[in-house]
Length: 336
Ligand code: HPA
Ligand code: ZN
Image (tube, rainbow, N blue to C red; front, side, top):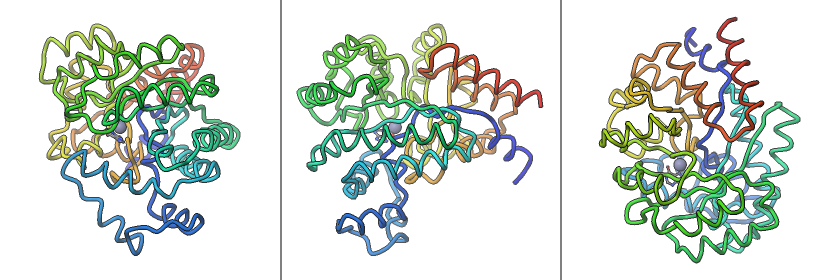
């Protein structure tokens, strides 16, 4: 470990773009498959890892949805989330906003309440065990219909006090934000925050639609916004947070090489970029690995890394007093 590696691990940070289903490590996948009597398409953990070579988002999604088939009970979701919280705590994460995809589970007959009860109980345990705060982002699968998304929002009704935001994930191309304008408006009426994946594979127009049609509070990814100077200026002026995921970008071929990753270009432009892991079990690293990978590839300075960590707090959905407390904690770390 170099001094910079140690600095990055200890940097207090929030993770704002993490799919809890994407934190399912092959070892836990096999353990849950055994516990639940679910057959897997792979003979062992090594074969699963060997299958994780993707040339685009859809390649990944096909394997990711198949892996989620081992998750059946509230205990499974609890164990999944605790494994993530323990790992994230070791990476200096003090606050995590975690996405989950109810439709991936309810389509297999898993009750919505099993998913959310397991996640909520793990969130309470993460607070006790690590002092870590967390929030839930319920995502709609964009390859499914608007009616399906409305059904999820309806089913979530009794649980809305436990849910902070809704999001939009899955296959981006061909499923523009406009498809979900009405369900996002309804979510906003419920007082939920709004996020959407945009500009990962989709064009800058999808980012513009996420802003103008969905009225999002945050953009997940947003890489392709850089193709439109007017859009960049608008994102800078509005202080819009981008939840950037460098190792995901590499694995899904959004960038050909981390040497070409735009994270520092985003900071220089004044964009409020953050660094996150997206689906760490599939993309080869948790959040500190993502910080380290771009620090090395793009020669980021300690000031750059501190700015990314600060953006993760100011871009979070925490109340302003908690944001201030986390920024003070970051300042204390930087001053130490
Ligand atoms: N993009 C879209 N959908 C997803 C992703 C992603 O990076 N990860 C999990 N679902
Ligand atoms: Zn994502």
